[in-house]
Length: 623
Image 1 (cartoon, rainbow, N blue to C red):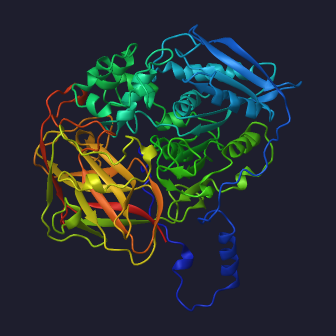
Image 2: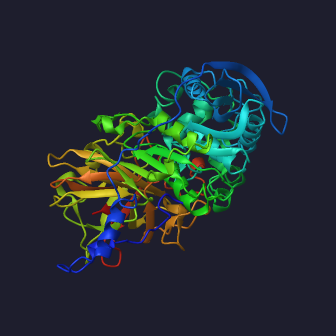
């Protein structure tokens, strides 16, 4: 399931459709007042931590406890709990980054001071835990179950356990949850990645560079250090390392040991392959096994963004209990490190920062301590709207009042230069010539993220967009403000001379002075298109791409957005077949496994936008 799998129909509020000048009845006024006093309309409302457990305990800690898993492997856990008599609800933090780091220990003390017993556990094969580490080992699922139930059975635990943690630790929470541990009563997955083919290591079939770097830094018990910089130095030489083929030999060429799992990553390139199927958690039948309520959080520039809205929708549809079917969702203007005022060069103001730990604590107070703190009265969805730099509360995701609006591509001169953009408008195309460009995998389109990562935020794309291998379509200046909140998708009609290629579509905000801001983007490897489902991404199969044949692609953007485009700004769509070094280039060979390809093929690309092939983007407009 993709982040935009729920194709919500347009819903118009009934008060917009009444005849003009008709007298309002008393009944109508009562109904209107009720609507305005409930969270079903989007309101400007910052998530408020409110009242939560106060700091009142001193903390004792015990390190290095060995907890046996069902297969005999022992995991190392540290316990921090209040120095007081009685039983306390538990919070499990399971990590692959060492349970002895200052940050995670400080977090454990913070909760223990507020009446929680906290267990910090090294995951299987990392640091002090036994076993061998494989990031997607299905035994992580049963390890999570075993740890939660061991925790709940301790004499100082109340038997109610919650989980919290970011990124990979978010994935481990979901892996444990789909095994239905009886004592799991609440989850706070922070910036949790989705299943492997929707974000990392594959983004809709396209290998992602940061996942390759992460694999190198995580291979082995304590990881491997290659040098200074992100991902233990593996991110420093991306541009050089990724231009040598095949991708299968990447970690070997980098001198990485203990990387047996990497061969599985590359050679098993379908979601139905044994390795990936065993580690998946987002199938409906697995969501149905999750009984605990969830507080899901991400950022508009989070590199693992898709997991959070996907899991919110999955729980709403398939959750295994009434509580599980009432998830909470918070998305700020943040990167992978949430709750910051700035992302890259943009300062979103102090409202972009929450009392996040306090809000999570209030969530645990409600579900682990069972306190009546009125958490359920808060709107379930809170989103930070860029441009307004304000929060908006809603009753669901996507927002029920969304007006799904199509913006069509039109020719307008040289569509591959900023001085002669194609056009973008709500007018359907008539008879128009297609636009073309050449994609050479040996000279891929450069990513606008200079750091090679989404932490650079809403970057200026003009440098890359001026190249001949990028198509650019820009709207007229907006006559009034336009607010876009929610998932974004594109309907692309395109042909390639190759037997496989990648399609990448980006939504950009253009200011009156010409500066640009990249908001969100969608990608798809052509051979993963499902010809029986409007050309949508299907990770379970590879289709055939006939050279020069126009094909339909429905591309769900891997990040949604919330942005107010002020009057005078313009919308821009960019289309390319690479964005390097964020995504690894497709060599266009058409091989079943691009990770084994060695010789790049230059592709002639054609994007159609006429009455029979109306290429367009669908924006979630909020009036």
